[in-house]
Length: 161
Image (cartoon, rainbow, N blue to C red; front, side, top):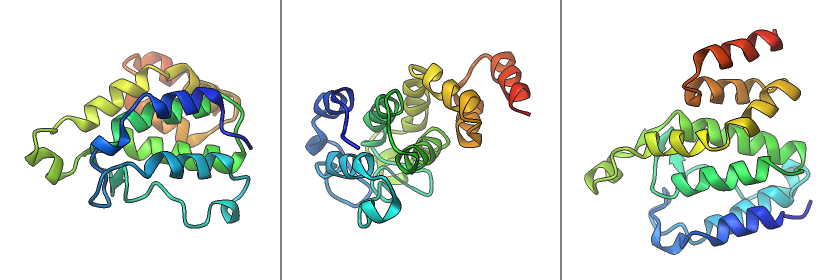
């Protein structure tokens, strides 16, 4: 699948070369990883391209995680392959369930988890769409972490049961 203009615009909004990455360098390579994942129809199409270890390590977040949430939501708002959707929804869960890596805390970025959850709330209806219309359990888990309206997420969870 082709990467949407919305995703390309969201990627272009950020200077990834100025953001810290979990691999120890800058996040300048993260847009390419997103594009490869979004263009993939299956795991074999994305061999060698994973966001693991770049945005987070075991839910310990790096600076690049916050703008990545916006990219994920932009991607989920359009047509993408089942493979890409599964990959991105899993990454979104890691980001909204995470907290700052100790190296980020030392640099004064102790609230990356809160920033990711706040950013994800901007796209709550996209996540809700996946939770309800696709019966996506990961999306429902994401909702449980970002939705401040507990009755709404509880209501939609009961509709999935």
